[in-house]
Structure formats: structure tokens, C-alpha cells
Length: 323
Image (cartoon, rainbow, N blue to C red; front, side, top):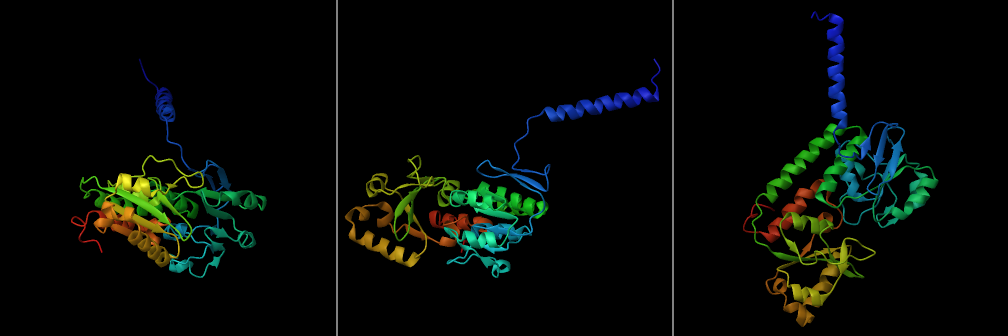
């Protein structure tokens, strides 16, 4: 049978169509970012879909932990929170302040007329109605775990229009963190993570920033599996009795402001409490107050530094080279 050129063309087209349909039939992982509507369609960490009609030029961030990620991928902000602990990129030092992470000045935010507000899930949720009523697009994002850092680098680079830069930075962080984790010995150390402020004390769970880093380093959080507080899904109530019962090898302390004051108070408690003195961590001088800039809010691009810092405390015999 003679095959004409026309028939060959039809056959090729049919084959291509079959390949395309087969590809479309495969299941694909849901994406948080789509380019199909306007400039960008984003599904934030609460499941809200926010469509940006054009590339944002006037971004306000409500958490300092977003700044280094945003600026690293070539983005910039016109508004940011103030900080008592530093951590503001040099390029963002002169950016207008809009209060603090836990006390945002909403009027100031609105006055800046932003075309995008990046808010922290779990802290700024209640601000959404007011921002939306002022026709301000806002996304709620979570940056606590290592995976969150990688995902937000890619998200922010999508927003800034610099996706290759975000992917490059994500790969760099991945290499550094994996290099540390690969050296972790299997010692099965037990740790407790205490979150202390001038007003309250709680114990952090695995899904907290410090808890997720401890888990990566194969440290067993004695509070793992405990019931979370209604007001804070990352923490459980502090109980000295439970601490004595689980008897951790190490205690990590994360403070929020007034670090010296909290440290002084904790040392006084340690010295005056007979129960504290029975803990292995106390007897072996393994109570460590962690730096606020690495463990209070997500360290962002400094995530490998936070992992290395805790690794040196937990396994000093392995990580002697870490400063």
C-alpha cells in the first residue's frame, strides 16, 4: 500500500496527540503558584487563592523573617516591621516601619497603599478582613520548617519574577543542611524545648521552628505527641512534673525579648528548685539558651546556621569545626 505525504502528516499528528493526552492524564502535584490568571495566582498556606493582576511593586511584609528571603531573590519592600533583635537586611534598613510583628499598625500599612501584603499565618490572620476591605491583596504564609523555607524562596522568586534565583538559593540551602544532617550520629538524645517570655513559659512541639530543627538532627523531643495549646499549635503547657518524668538529656530555651531578664529568672529557678536539680540536663550543665535571631522566628537563609548551631551543642564531638 502506498503511503502519501498527506497520510504521513496525519499519522504524525495523531501520534503527537496521543502523547499529549497521555501526559495530561498523569496526576500532577498541586501547585501553590499559577501563571494562568493575571500576573500570578497564589494559593496561600490557609488555602486562600489570591490573584495578582500585575507584578507587585509595593510590597509590605508583616514579619521580619520574610525580608532576607524576599531581598535574596531580588524583591523589595516598601513597609516592614521594626526589630529589637536585628536581622534586617541592609537594603531594607530605610524601609518604612509598620509597627512590630506582633503589633502591626494597620493604619500605617493601609497608608502605604501596597499592591501586596505578605502576612504570617497564625499571627496576622485577624488582619485579613480589614486589608481586603481596603482592596489590598494579602497572602498568609507559614515559614517554620525547613521545607517552608525552600517553598517560600520559590514563591517569593515567583512574585519577584526571578524564579531561577529562588531555585538556585533553595539548592544551596539544601546542600548545606544535608551535609550537616548526614554527619549526625545515632545517639538518641532526649531534649526539651522551653519557650520563655517575661510573662509565660511553654514547651515547644515538633512543628515549632526549634522542634523541627531538633527532629532533623535526630533529637527526640520529650514533648512529642503532647496536646497543643488552643492558642498556639506549636506548643504545649509547661509542666515541671512532666519534665522530671521524661528527664531530658538537654534543655533548649528559646526566649522572646528580654533575653537577659528571662535567662536571669531561669537561673534563679534552677538554683532554688530541688526538682530542677534532679534533671540530667541540669546536673550535666546541658541547659542552653538559643539565640533569638536563629530560633524565635524562622532564620530564613540562615537556616543552615541554625541547624549547625544546634548540631554543635548536641554532638560537639562531631561538629568541632562549627563556630
